[in-house]
Amino acid sequence: MIGQSPRRKEDERLITGRGRFIDDIVPPDRRGLAHLVLVRSTHAHARIAHLDVQAARRDPRVLLVVTGKDVAHLGPMPVNRLVPDMRVPPHPILAETHVHAAGTPVAAVVAEDPYAAYDALDLIGVEYEPLPALPEPEAALAEGAPLLFSGIDGNRPLTRIIREGDVHRAFAAAAHVVPLRVAQARISAVALEPRSVLASFDRSTDELTMWVSCQAPFRIRAEMLREACLILKSMWTNERTTFESTHYRLKDAQCERSPCNSPRSPCGSAAWASGGPFGWWPRWPTGGTRS
Image (cartoon, rainbow, N blue to C red; front, top):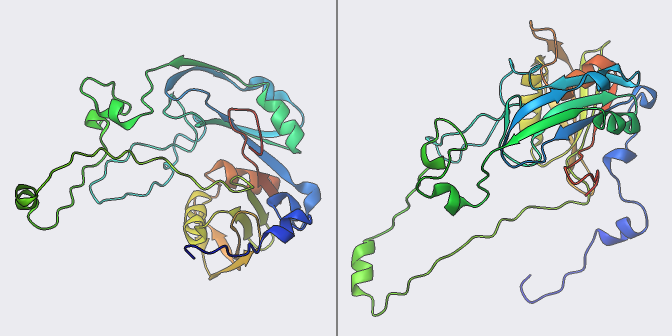
């Protein structure tokens, strides 16, 4: 591939209007489709001083409003541990008392249509008490830096040292020693469509079908079974489709409800409460829904 100019294969589909996104999928009962949007923090580090969702709950078009207090009894969101002894701070489904990153969800709204859901966001009042933010790693590790999470001394979640051979001997025998500081840039894949979910729960068969724009279908399957309190009774099938970000259709032939008998996550609540399809499209602090 180096030095060559390979022909792109996906452009024709996109420029001719044949790209397919979550919005293009028609669930079995589109008429009952509910929509979920999130209220996200505009601060990188802050205490949630006040959160008022009563006006949003009174909106007749709103089906459900969930706050961190409502889901505080649930397990935190899963986080990859890079090394066995890595100290991982809590990642609640919805922040209840503090936010530690811009964009952290503090409330979720489920409504009859996306316009009603976004209108309800404007009815939610959030007051923050800003706290020192440490977006750069060197400043976060500096002596005397404020702690972002209790229990993680020095804001250092892990220390990993990799050695190969006799390093000191190699430097001592070198003709020249050159100091070098390497700053690794932050990178992230930017798909044409942000993370989106379409879920449909069939009460008659206890069947859950999800369309997810993510590249980890098996992990999503396991976490949704845990969060929605479902017990897997048969194999899932994975259909990869041609979406603009990688989407998967996760379909379980048969599930049964576990003793908790209720969904645990906002996503599970929306699909379960509506008894039919449910969609989630992100909205970031900038105000854009597709940015």
